[in-house]
Length: 70
Image (cartoon, rainbow, N blue to C red):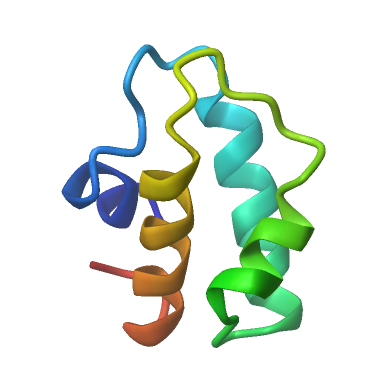
């Protein structure tokens, strides 16, 4: 998951990264291949100060497609 975030430029300032990673990992544990809409729904409670939501969603989808790694 961390590598997928790095590849997709998910962790910009790092303020939200721990919570985003924890929520994304929990999502993939329950749904190993989520759609972008499913990721958005699951991540709704995590606020990103950089407004980097699209990169975060792409990272989680990529991690799901690749078994949790980029």
